[in-house]
Amino acid sequence: MRYTALMSVKVKVESVSKLFNDERGEGLKRLAQGQSKERIFRETGVTVGINEVSFDVNEGEIFVIMGLSGSGKSTLVRTLNGLIPPTSGKILIDGTDVASCDKKTLRNVRREKISMVFQHFALFPHKTVAENVAFGLKVKGVDKDRRRDEAMKALEKVGLDAHADTLPGSLSGGMQQRVGLARGLANDPQILLMDEPFGALDPLIRREMQDELLVLQKELKKTIVFITHDLNEALLLGDRIAIMKDGAFVQVGTAQDIVSEPADDYVRAFVADIDRSRVYTASDIALDAHRVPLTGTVADARKAMEAADTEILHVVKDGVPAGLLTLADIKDIKPQERVMNVMHAHPPTVPQDAYLNEIYSEAQAGMPLAVTDDDGKLVGVVEPGSIFTHLANEEEATEDAAETSTSEDTQETKAKTQAAEPA
Ligand SMILES: Nc1ncnc2c1ncn2[C@@H]1O[C@H](COP(=O)(O)OP(=O)(O)O)[C@@H](O)[C@H]1O
Ligand SMILES: [Mg+2]
Image (cartoon, rainbow, N blue to C red; front, top):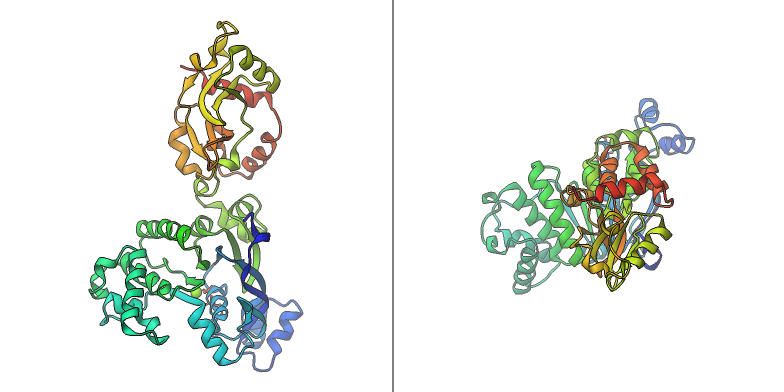
């Protein structure tokens, strides 16, 4: 994420290891010598749960930890809220080291700062939805009326306030998981730990929950550590993603980092079958846009085309795309004619943070897409063809993008014009 330097670190993990059944410290010694998890287990019976993991999670960030079953994700997330003491290392939650603090401090951190949401919703079947959501508040000593208020607020956030007084058993899996999420949100924690929360849901419901979490997070801006074994889910949700193997992190980066430069064969194998259309955004594949003002003349447009060595321009009004103009459009037009009278109005426009799966349909017409910032101003242009190249899986696609975004390749320009020419 781009603003890392300005943000405060909410979770700081320093060289944390966790070994199971290592009473004599033999496993830790061998780990320090670089022996593999598999060998240590074979020769000593010690299980390496986490191997020298370090990372920071910034305030408001979704940090995803992804790895196969048994790679150490749950162990790691449980060390974060003090459920499992690490064998070595530090875990700072908002500055407090939960690995070494006294019990009372730990209890306070757990009550005040952290909530955990699990895969198995762990709802009490005989308590109502609202009572389930309020449960953590009860433990915290909040009085009854306020518990109800807070629970209702949390249920509203996940769209389940109408079901407050029903029993969880009457709800679908997706709704039950929403109750789990509401329970996590009820005491308004700064940090949300989510251990494969959508793992038990059907694919469609799962997609819905992922999208809902993102919508919710826009408003809540919690610091979230999200565990999954699904790379598509990781790429969709994570501001940054850590890939875990045998207790260690093999790569930490943004979705684009991981997809375009997998650190090793393990990561590459995951990346091979992801849905790229949910990884790359319009701005990732945008090229420089060339423009002429709406008040300009055909002579201005010709000059701009020559200067940029292009045959297509966006017509802009106060920086906002208002039209498209190709060389063919102005071929037989007199120089003093206004561009607004010859341009194609309403050029296809997409926001810079739209994912490629969201801009497919706009690209169908074959016209270049105007890419706009939050203020609707033109910041780049996407060639319809480059969308499909990027979805074509190969790492070359990313290399291509890196090249074309800096060069004025004539072939690109040609493709651009052909694509934009009216049939
Ligand atoms: N309480 C425990 N005792 C012994 N080994 C454990 C214990 N908990 C987890 N492990 C081992 O630690 C490793 C990591 O497990 P876990 O954190 O549950 O992985 P994940 O959540 O990624 O599936 C596995 O090899 C697992 O068998
Ligand atoms: Mg697990």
